[in-house]
Structures are given as C-alpha cells and as structure tokens.
Amino acid sequence: MPQLAYVNGRILPLANASLHVEDRGTQFADAVYEVCAVLNGQILDWQPHLVRLRRNLAELGIDWGMADGPFTLQARRLIAANGHRDCIIYIQISRGTARRDHAFPGQAPANVVMTVRRFDFGQRLRQLETGIKVITRPDNRWGRVDIKTTGLLGNVLAKQAAREAGAFEAWLVSGETVREGSSTNAWIVKDGRIITHPIGTAILPGIARDSLIRLATAAQLVVEERPFTLAEALSADEAFLTSTTAPILPVVAIDGQAVADGRPGQITRRLGELVWNEVARQTGWRA
Image (cartoon, rainbow, N blue to C red):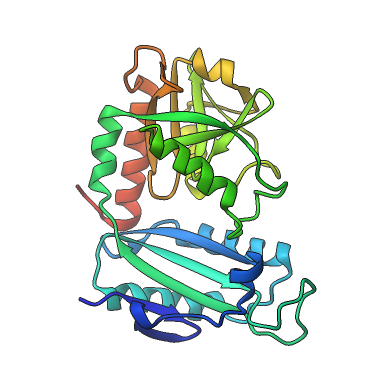
C-alpha cells in the first residue's frame, strides 16, 4: 500500500505531503511533536500522549482548535488508511505559516502533520534478552527539554555519535549527573532500588517512564526519582532505558564498560514482563 500522510485535514500520498516554506516549525523549530506506538492497530497510551501534547502546546502558547475526539478520529483514520497493524504515528503541530519574524504572527492557524511508518516491535523483545550499549555525551540542549519541541539538534548529534560508536543510545550528562538519553529516559538499579532522574525542566517526562513507575509501584518495587551520577551508573547492579518505541531495554555497557556482569539483570527482566503485559492489556498484541 502507498504511504499516506495527514496535512491540515487532508490525507494524501507521502510523496506529495508538504508545508509552506515559511512554516514556523521549519524556520524556528516553533513546533511540538508526539510519537505514539501502534500495536495490533491500537494506539498505546493514547490519552497520556494527548495530555502531554496539549500541555506542551500551552507552554509555547500555540493555539490549536481541534478537540481530542475529532483529532483521535483523524489519527485512527490515518493509521487505518496506511494499513499497518504495528507502526508508529508521528504528530507535529507548529504555530503556523507566516512571514518570517521572531515575534508570533497575529493570525496564523496551526499546521498539523501526521505520518505513519511500519515498526517491528518484535525486535525489542529480542533486545530485551541481549541488552544494548550506550555511550555518554555532554548535555548541550536548551533549558526546557521538558517541552517536546522539534528543536532536536543536540539530540540528533548525540544519537549520531552513538551510532558511530556502535551503540544504541547516548546518555546526556550535565556535570556529573546523567539526565536522560537522546530519545529515551535513563535508569539504574542499585541494591534493589530503581532510580531515575526526577521530573523538571532538565528531562522529558516520558510516557513510558510514567507507565513504568506506575507498574513498578503496583508490583511493590522501590522507585527513587532522584539525580544519579555517571559514577553511580558505572557501578550499578543494572541499568536500562525506556521510551515509547523501546519500551524498555536493558543497558549492558556504558562507554565500553560492562554494567555488572554485562547481562540484563533480574529486576530489569521483571520490569520487562510488567511492561509487555501492559502492552498486551491495552492492545491485545502478542509476539
């Protein structure tokens, strides 16, 4: 089937999908986005994604007139039109199209774009067994990474550095503190305690992050939301990362140094069971 995209109310072939050159998302990164996992044709954690999307739009003062119900119908319509049961849907909303000027335009309706692409979630189950490697890089992003904007150059450069190093991800470090990955949240386990950086302006409040905390707490596992250092990560009993498309992967090496015995740990495996059971509960997906 041909790839189809959504642009301001229209579904059209991806090759023909475009915005005006003066779209503010293109010229200023004056836009926010969301990425959602679709498994078995069902959108995972859709309501939390909508809540975060609206929060981020409000933080930037972008006026978007569509209500949740009609927008949900448009997203599901695009997924169905593309014909993929397992995929990811990308959503981007910019301040609109206007003459290039730093100040906000007076009357410019928001530009809304969505795309869908096939995704193999089965690979994540295989990686859950083997684990993945990360490197570290200095965190040189702007000061409000809690807002999911399209201004991702720092993230892009970090992810490319990871790829060139043969790693899955780059963890971003400020001073001695590990904040998060270029597109994931970072976690360690020490003495049975699950540790991740607290919510604030320094990290993105990940949907998968929130879900894991909820699941771990319900399973009576101890979660600490506090900063941790690179030294702590290197001496941790276990480490892992979370994201919408991961959704949880064990980290078995950091900057070439093995985490513990270099294999996925017991608590991470237990969390993996909880996470994938939740995926199945919401979507009915099975490997």
